[in-house]
Every structure is written in structure tokens, then in C-alpha cells.
Image (tube, rainbow, N blue to C red):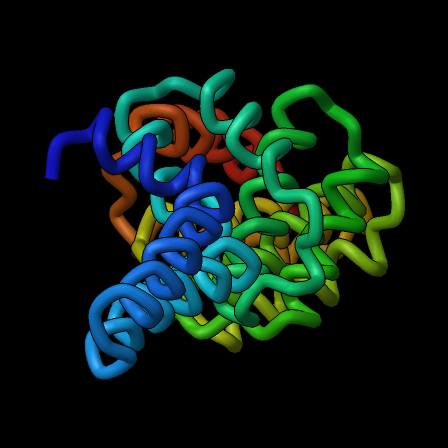
Length: 218
């Protein structure tokens, strides 16, 4: 389906459903009620889609194109997020959390992540990713105990790839280093290294951490 047509249908579900209801009554009175049920049914499905899915079906295209501003405007069109179907609601709050993280609004990012978890994350690895993000936020806030717990939970739940796993172990390594628990720090670093991350940023972090690990006693 043409993207412009798809956007038109998604953004105008309610007006179109009203037109379809009108068409249904017209067919019912002028032709037969046996045909009128078709536009009534389509109108009902459009109303349900408006409230249960909203414009979220379009969000992937914006994210893939790197149009974060467009994605943010799309999220703003969701007026009743609590009415969204649970998996869709979870994705909505997760995307909100990512947007808030980019602007370093840690409180809003944390709140959105918790709402995403409450809605129930169904995609494999994404629940772990949410806890990994909560851990990173807690660490930025200086709450290393909470950060440690969240990151450990993220690893237990499972992460989507080795890059995320390596990042989690590096964060645990850093926390243990702050606690001067050098043994645990070395263990976590070894696990991070074993992940063989391919992301350039994480590879650089591993190399940088290696310098500190080499100077540790024991």
C-alpha cells in the first residue's frame, strides 16, 4: 500500500468511519440491510483500530528512516495511551523512553520504561533491554545499588544480542570497580570480552576498560 494512502487512512480513521456509517444507512434504506452491514463492520474495525492501535502501525517507517522528529510527532498523536492494546502500549512507552533518554530527561525516561514493563513486553529480549536501560539511568543518577540489580536482572531475562550483553557486563564491571570489588570486576570484564561485541562504541569501551583491569591488584 502506498505510504501516503496508508497515512491518510491511519490519520483519518474516525472521519472515514462516520462516512461509512452514513453509507451503511444509505444502503440500508435505499437498497437492502443485507448489504449495509459491510460498511458498518468496516467502520467498527476502524474505530477499534483508532483507539487500540492508533498511529503506532506507522512508527517503524519513521524509526528505520532515522526521522526521530517525525516519530516524536507521531507519538504525540496518541491521545489515550491507556486504551492502546497492551503490546502496542508497551512499544509506545518504550519509544517514549528512548526519546526522553536522548534528551537526558532521566525521570521521564524511567517513568516511561516502567509503564512499558507494566503493560507487558512480549518481544524476546526487550524486557531485558528495558531493565538494562533502567540500570543505566540509575547509574547516571548515582544509585549504583539499584543499577546493579537492574542490570543483573536484564542479563537473567536475556538481551537481544551480544553487543547489549557486553554493554551490560561492562556496566557491572564498572560498578564493581567503584566498590573496589576487583575480583568481581575482572570476572564481569572477562564475560564482556567473551561476548565479542561488534559495535564500534562497545569495542572501544572494552579496550578502554582493559587498561584499568590491567592495573588492578590481584
